Length: 315
Image (cartoon, rainbow, N blue to C red; front, side):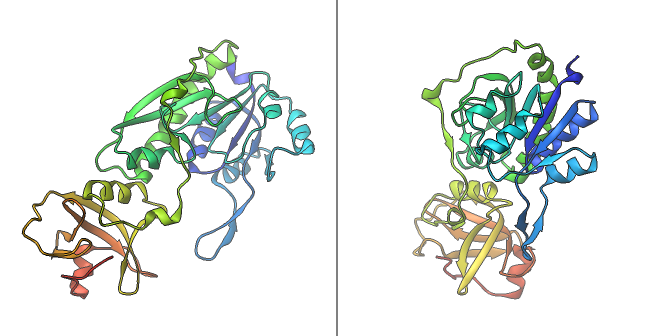
């Protein structure tokens, strides 16, 4: 029976915690959890355990937190666990070839895209940025390359026009946990269906960088709206204001004819309880939720009640 599998689970963030919880709930034998070392988080930079580590502790599952899996001592420790299968979800560390070959059934990965589209670290954000209308979950047999292994199963879901990365992340985490449960019996059989990826159509989801969050007002409003959604909850879209940085949590594009306006791009052209309208390279971007440095998030209506920004440049 699949539930007799000796499973190592490797993951770090909330995205990985949900499938781990699902495995536990369904009686699978998790013999060890691998997760990244505790890191400083939040304003206070307090050293904090990952969501996966906290969950493993709750169920008294042994936890391993190596900085790397390349050292021979770390690999020997993993080999000694005598696992049938290693399940990986947003672990954040490279698995060397030696590790990939250790479990009897190999290593499988839960990836938040429909591979070969969006291989890499930030598939959810890159899909929103690109304007994709569909994404999904791929469960793949891991190989030496970056998300290049053969596909075992996939399930798609729509990307809605209002989805932020946070919203889409939660939907995909649930989808991944459910798809894993239906896929495990196929893996346990030793002969899962494998579909090779077409690398000629692969796209790369590069890791997000903080500097990407600063909005370029010469770009079209539709693209800026997607950036606001993609960078929520991190690194959060931003613009310059009053010798500081204004974070933009919610915004949407507004179609507009700007031929008659002799106003520079990046200027606030209108304010109302509905939002703050800014001229972009094409159409308007209406900001509806924003945040000043060291302040709470507020609505655009709250913001303009306290200050007059009509005609202000945010460049």
